[in-house]
Image (cartoon, rainbow, N blue to C red; front, side):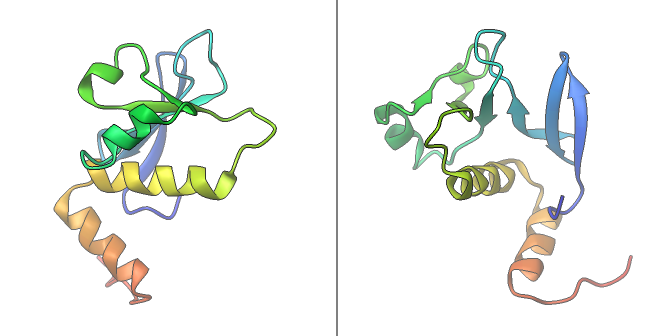
Length: 113
């Protein structure tokens, strides 16, 4: 995990990935789609995801603006999934985490704390 303060935590019998205490990614939208990824898109991007048939609104999470995508298809674009993970982290991260991430993006070394 290269994201500041990111951790994997099991919840509801599945892996969740968190920025501090906030979930930014959930694996397995539901029992019928165990090979899927639930992510938090930006508000600007949400309408485009809703129009794209690769994405679906996950039960429980969808009404709050989260989306999901199956990750077990033969044409899975792993680079694109990485971009979705990054977008999701940036949506839930705290200001201090985003500041650290910008430093990492710029190639600046982080101060030791």
